[in-house]
Length: 202
Ligand SMILES: Nc1nc2c(ncn2[C@@H]2O[C@H](COP(=O)(O)OP(=O)(O)OP(=O)(O)O)[C@@H](O)[C@H]2O)c(=O)[nH]1
Image (cartoon, rainbow, N blue to C red):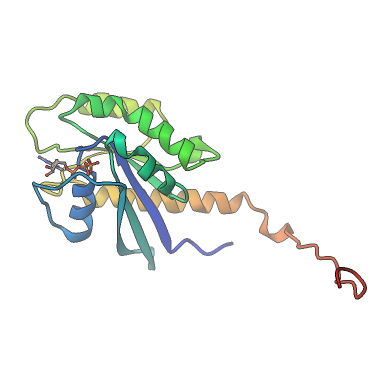
């Protein structure tokens, strides 16, 4: 059996303003800034945690949600181990756009088996009183789109932020274990031709 991954790339996607940077900052620095600027392109922060007695470094990629930054963010999708699809519970359009974010990710990350890729869905800003998306609607979407885990988070008061990242880590490691099992490591043989003394170029 192959060793488990010790570096996981987790990427946050979703409309501009839903709180991706705030969620990352809350998780890594335990701080909240009510006056953040929009992200341009991508930014990342690392956090190391212990999983089943092993150190795992989470590399969290925060992307720019605004449409005009699309070409700046998409080159960074490849190699992601988990994708956090994020919307804001006080913004119905950001919820309706989840399908587009999923499609964009699958295309630019070049995901070979989308049905097996670990997505986790975050409904952020649950501290606000004016909701436009109910928990039921969001859970139904998750169920119908691949049985994704759903977390209602608040970067502002830290609700469910850590637990959502922990789930992302577990999903990513489980997907990695599954991929390992598909590779019959005991039957792989490298065939090398012996180097001929007379072959090649002089
Ligand atoms: N009430 C509340 N406000 C939040 C929460 N998370 C983020 N915000 C606010 O929402 C605004 C946008 O947050 P960002 O974290 O910059 O959003 P983003 O998704 O990274 O936006 P882009 O960089 O444009 O993609 C900021 O004013 C935040 O302070 C939350 O959980 N609750």
